[in-house]
Image (cartoon, rainbow, N blue to C red; front, side, top):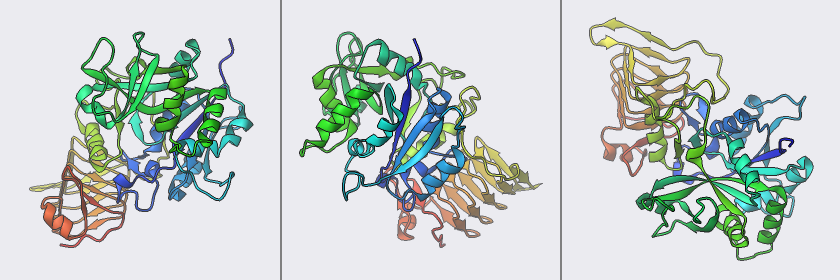
Length: 412
């Protein structure tokens, strides 16, 4: 049987308010992650590595840097009809923007009609994970499903913050989809776990089109993929769950197999970075059999200078990008993006430092996220005294992470 024609639609239009101030002037999927990457690079890398190379990225809010990243980084050969293209909100059906993820696809049905795929994969743009989505497509076709939703087992007591999937006795047919239930149903055979939706779906094309049309006619709908389309298709039958833990990614080690993080909050974003810094990281970005692809700037290798008394340039348990200079300072348990400069006698610990930020002499940065182009003057402390940080206009997350916005002035 010929391989199915798959069109991927990546939903990248969310405002990402919970990640403010990192989303003050960029879309959430364009937020830098892991030094070199943008959040959207993980979804796009998974699709491309799996062989799905016809990809539309639906954008809306503050999309300039995201559009630029996609058009300059994700240029595929057109010889075989491959493409990754950003698609802004176009108001094709009237003078209104997207009102939900389902409405975004409904307003963009021309993309599906033009491509004529057998299967449409609808994926989120802002999760950190590895996945061979073609294995999910195979299960979808084997079960003759109308929709297949990727699910990950989570402790039942933690499942109330997710959309939860209740499966039948066979372990994959979906009997109910519950949005953040107070009493999540357990997995058959393992009641201490529940299936959380990952926000990734595979649809048979005709089923998706008809569901979107029905939803568009419903004035009471929120026009959301997880909140409206999936429950509709569950009621109609033909909805199935795909267990993400069954996915086998080349090069994955037992420690990071099944890793998935929704980095929708400042604390989850920060914690996902710390996952990268361990000696044996929970998520291994060095898996060259399933690389996370991105644009790598033309900057020189990282450099560490000075080794005299307490003026030693060093980084320990840290991810350090190209173009970084650690000049007589200490970096520990941190992630540094390209072009960062850490000057003498300074200390950076448990922090995320983005592009071209400067840490002055004798400065201290702890438990913090510093966006691009921040300058921490000599002797200034960030992240140690949270009340002082708030008084200076910095955001402090519920978990106690200080966040300095892009180019924000840092005063003593």
